[in-house]
Length: 160
Image (cartoon, rainbow, N blue to C red; front, side):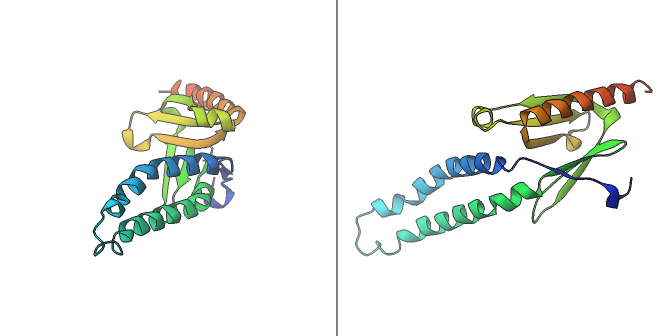
């Protein structure tokens, strides 16, 4: 199958909400730490005390702004011999996982994922560099994909 014939599937748009919650939650400590200079009561330093907080908030806003584009960059394709996963905006990465090399296909769901009806599909191979995690899949899609990959992997391993 050539690159033109590859049909890319995308993750659920609801994954943007999960990514947003994780990003905002992860930025609470840096924002709090960057606000420490505001607690200093020296009037000579008051104007400069806003810089760390402003820079931190600008970085958080930039990361939050890229969430929709980052989620759209996730994709996977089922080809004849392997599953290909891609991600990344600036630093793009594509990983091909041969069906015959799959050792474990796992579906995981955290509390926020369950609330949104999403799950994460984890593919494990013997090589650590080809392990793939596909986030933001609706649960029925993840379970169907897991079952399909396990069935195909079993037939491919039978010849080894």
